Amino acid sequence: MASIDIQAVRKSFGPVSILKGIDLAIAAGEFVVLVGPSGCGKSTLLRLIAGLEDMTSGQIRIGGVVVNDLPPKDRDIAMVFQSYALYPHMSVRDNMSYSLKLKKTPRERIAEAVNRAGAKLGLDALQDRKPRQLSGGQRQRVAMGRAIVRKPKAFLFDEPLSNLDARLREQMRFEIKKLHRDLEATSVYVTHDQIEAMTMADRIVAMNGGVIQQVGTPLELYDDPANMFVAGFIGSPAMNFLNGTATAAERGIVVRVGEAVLATLPPVAGLPADGRVVVGVRPERVACGTAGVNARADLVEPTGLGTVLHLQLDGQDFKAFTTDRPAITVGEQVPLAVAAGDLRLFDPRTGERLRPAS
Image (cartoon, rainbow, N blue to C red; front, side, top):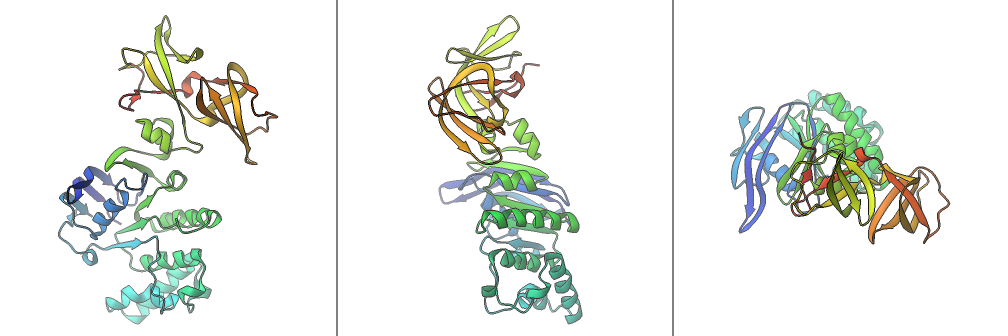
């Protein structure tokens, strides 16, 4: 395993700037997830690490060695693609061993490596099958096995689960994370699925528009988002954003949405002069049936685990999630309450978080 250091990396395709100065240090043995919407630059960054694209400027070091001018085969990394990229005419065994054969590795060592990887991934009984005889999850395990046998310095995953159904994705998340724990390998994983990011990452790198928005542990991004993008992207159901006001009071600032008072908070730094703010609150932090403010129910969605309520508060869309099964009908007024500590305030002009004054 090896560290990966990315310094001031930029990438442009003609006049279009894709990455706008990326700085990121990935520790040896760390599992880092690059997450963001389509077009944010996460896959481009992964391809730059792999050497599949040339950077416009900047520097990448793997294990302390500058790899800017090294071809992919000399970077000692293994990549698992979304499309599996298996040779259709080869068996599972041959797919997994192909890279070792190219290196003229002795047969005994190839057999040992393939058998060891196959045992880890549950592929022992599938070694003689062709890719067309495998399910999507089995094909993905073969692609992972092909990467494992090389014993690379780092593993790169480019949205490897996006072609699988929900149940298989859940199973493969567990298998990839367990594999990472067993191998103690440096891993960089790209996804647009924030559930994958939250459940798998040691650290999440949230990207948007070719810029890193925030880096931290999953719970740091969930509990302490740096801006509206991170707050809205991490979490399911997504955070509510309501146009509101924050006005000075004797004990702090009073946060209102329309005429409804949500809470009184300690003073915040950088509060806009006109008091206009965006109020963020996660649906699961809303207490339903508790006296506070009233919101009109527009839709009730039972999920089994709980209920998602689609509401209107001061003419704005608002969601609440409760593990109860409330008997609420469309059009009914629902009493809600939010704890002051669960509110997040943002500057409506910049989208940046407004934090408590020091």
